[in-house]
Length: 120
Image (cartoon, rainbow, N blue to C red; front, side):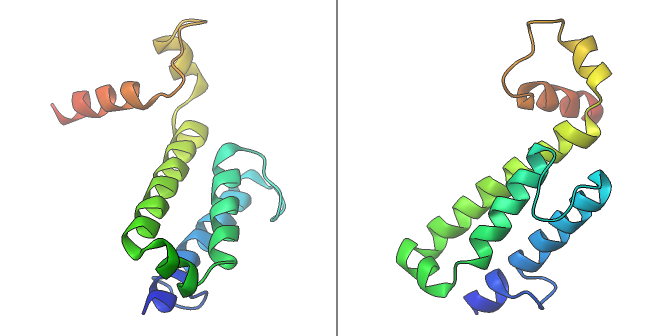
């Protein structure tokens, strides 16, 4: 079951299949050839795809299923953050909200604030 849900290249709901498609779409958007990267989201999805391509159930069981899936979730969150910062958050918005020299290392606090304002 782990092989099907995590590592299958054909099963459209497997993690590997979804990451492969996301990686393909990101490369289509940027025009960068597959196997190379032009931004952080392509780098993260490419690294994650390679990890999933060269792993299998024995590695999952050795690490522990829960720990392996937790690590995947952290990497998927990083990919989502990178997509947001590269394609959704416009540079002009960053400059408007963070004057030169005040931009935080991560924009997640600003994003949380924006999400809270949208929910109100």
